[in-house]
Length: 191
Image 1 (cartoon, helix red, strand yellow):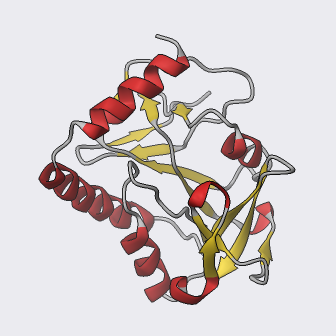
Image 2 (tube, rainbow, N blue to C red):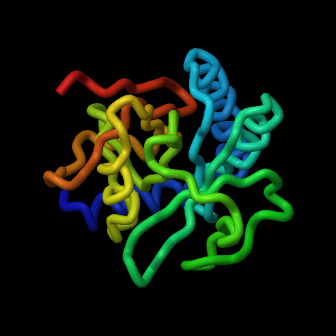
C-alpha cells in the first residue's frame, strides 16, 4: 500500500470504532501514557491539541500541568510551512483558533526552542511496528522533529487499529521512540 491508501485505511478504521470503543481505548491509552511518562525525567513536554479523529489528549496535558511541569503546544506557520511551539499556562486563556481550525497558542505566549523540549507527543494517522509515523501529508511535524536534539523523547499515542504492518518511509520521515496503544507500547528498534 502507498501512503495515501494507508491514510485512507487508518481513517476508515478510526471511523468504524464505536463511541464506547473510542472512550474505552482512549482511557487505556492515557493510563499507559501517564505510566510511561512517569518513568522519564522530562520537564518541558510538547503536546498537540487533538482534532476529531485523534485521541483526546487534553486530560494528559492537564495531568502534566497538575504535576507542576511546563507545557508547550504548536502554532502552525502556514506561510513558512513550519511549526513553532509556545509555552502555555492555561488552556482556557492561552489558546485561539489557528490554522486548519485547530486550537493553538496565542502569539503572545513565550516561544520554546527545540532544545528546551524534553518530550514531544506527536499526532499521526498510522504507525508501524518500527515506530514509523504517517501524518496527514503536509510534513509540518517531520520538519520540526528533525530539529529536535537526539535526547528529546518522541512519543505517539494511537488506537491499535492505526498500527499497520509497514509504513513506507522516506529520508525526511522521523520515527517515534515509542508508540502507545490501548494494548501495548511499541518501542523503536535501534537503527
